[in-house]
Image (cartoon, one colour):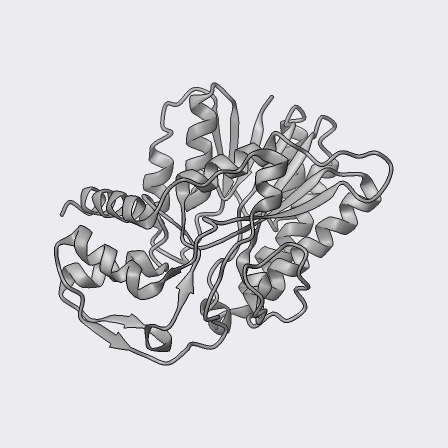
Length: 326
């Protein structure tokens, strides 16, 4: 049965598509190829699938109701949906808030309506974010924690998407799971993320911006671990026993928070070049530390992250050099 992946030209979506295709699955990929970051990178990710048996691509906006509902009619055999299309980025939400409402809320609604039209649907897995924990100070972040204090519009839209999906799961008995991703990095990563920006600037001999005077910690999670966790979850839909809504939320993180300065040191070693650091104050919407409690993910679908930044960062650097011809 086909798997629908929204955001298939994105960082996580392209990696998941690659693994599913290698398994012999059919992938229906959707992406609008917007210009939030370099479209050429998105096109290069898609180019990996040229001539690949079982891959079909549709360029469309997930908030386009007519196009998405038409897609459901075109592929009624879709039995799993991995919804990753979103307007990402905390800081960009200060510049273009409307993009977040359009994609992360209206788009989520349209995807849910699309799922309702798929008669064989077994499971919708969708991307949430560690940003929903907002101003929480209790660490590690647990899915049992209250998340009523968003510190960015991006976080608010992701929490809204969880609530909207929970209501659909209740009303229509639609099996759905939200995954709160924690700082994903690795080959084919996003240019708006710190690791990509730092690598680019260090190689160019430019200073790197380090916020909150470097006093930051993140649960950096390697892309292969995220893919394994997402697909593990996809194969374990929440049961519908007539009780509560068949909707769950899980953390996908490395379960090991690292200081930002350690990441920079690891990157310097991988590049063989020291960084010139420009310390800056904390940015609006940012948080000082993230850390994932993944006990539920381990218990329910065997999530087991194995990649440290000492292993993952050099792999990213190797890809970066190759992709940019350095």
